[in-house]
Length: 178
Image (cartoon, rainbow, N blue to C red; front, side, top):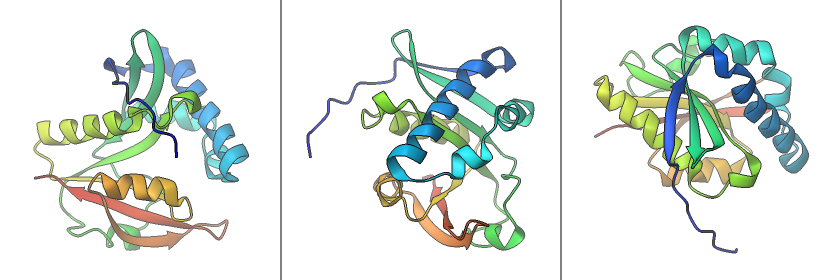
């Protein structure tokens, strides 16, 4: 495996609806990449432009830049993801504890493997600490082992899984902040 130079994100900004097209562009590009490269269609099946627009209503949406170029996006909220059933929530260590939920973490394909997603996860953790929230939570596709291992290396733990309508499983991931 060839080593890549990890270049830092130089700026992250919380954005509003005026950046919808930029955020949608990243998510759409990632959806296509996931479908073509990993044969995973869950994002292309779920994330329409309208779904991305809904994130701006009650989630904080951020864009990450490397110099002046947009390289990624992430959304965070104390609101649970709408498709989590109670039995999914019960998988977390302390299900009723305040948590910051991560959604729509996407990095432009040409910047993947360069530390952008790590920087965006660190941002989520900083936001959680700033609100005195102990947990950061999200889900990911169980069969996408490269991504699962990425999260595990950053201190996130598997808390269980639930099946989706396409027959694949989603892992519930969680990290307790120290």
